[in-house]
Image (cartoon, rainbow, N blue to C red; front, top):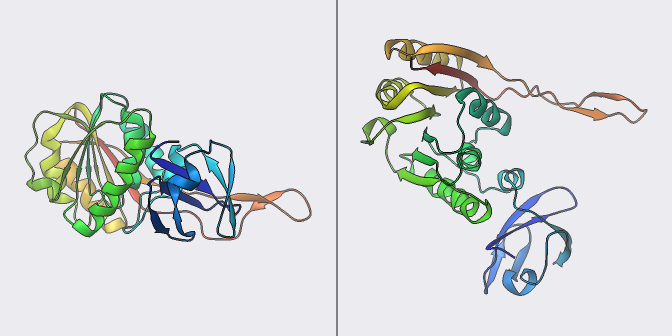
Length: 254
C-alpha cells in the first residue's frame, strides 16, 4: 500500500487517506490509525471503519480530484480537459498556471506533463496555496510520473522566469497585467488560456491578448448536461442547472 489510499463510500464519496502510524481524525470517518487498518489491504478490498464499509480504489486522477481538499472554487474537469486539449500540452512541456487556488487544474496538468515536464504555479493568497500544494503533494505520491514543480507565493506578473513556456493558464480576478507579462514568456506557437467568470472579464482578456500580440483562437463556454435513467424506462436530462462554470479564451503566439 502506498503513502496515500483512496477509500470510496457506497454513496461514491471519496476519501484520500495518508497512511501513517498514528491515530488521526479524518473528516467523515472519525479517529483511527490508518497504517494499522490499511497497510495489509490491497486495491479492491473492503474495510469497515466506524460504521461505514469502504472500498479501496486505485489512486487515479478522477479519485484524487473528487477527494481533494478544497478552499477556492476549482476549475472543473470538463474545463480542464478542454484547456489541456486546446493548449496542446503534454509530456515534457513547461506550463505556467496562475493562480493555483485549490489545485484542481494543477492535478490534471501534472498527470499529462510527466516526469520531464515542468509545472510553474503562482498564487499570492497563502490560505489558498496551502490547500493546492497539499493536493499536489498527494498526487506526487500517487501518480506514476510527476513533473518538476516550482511555486511562487506571488502574482505571476511579478516573478522572474528563466526560459520559455509552452503554455500559460490564467485564472485570477484581474487578467490584463498577467497577460501582458506572461506573453513574453511564451515560445513561438505557445498558447495562453484565460478562465473568466464574467463576460466583462472575457472582453478584457480578449483585448489584452490582442495588445500583447497574441492571436485569438477560441472564446466561449462549455455546457455540461447530465442524463439519467427514468423510473419508467428510457433516459432524459436530470433535474438541475445547465453546467456552465466560466468563460474560456485561447490565444496563440505566432
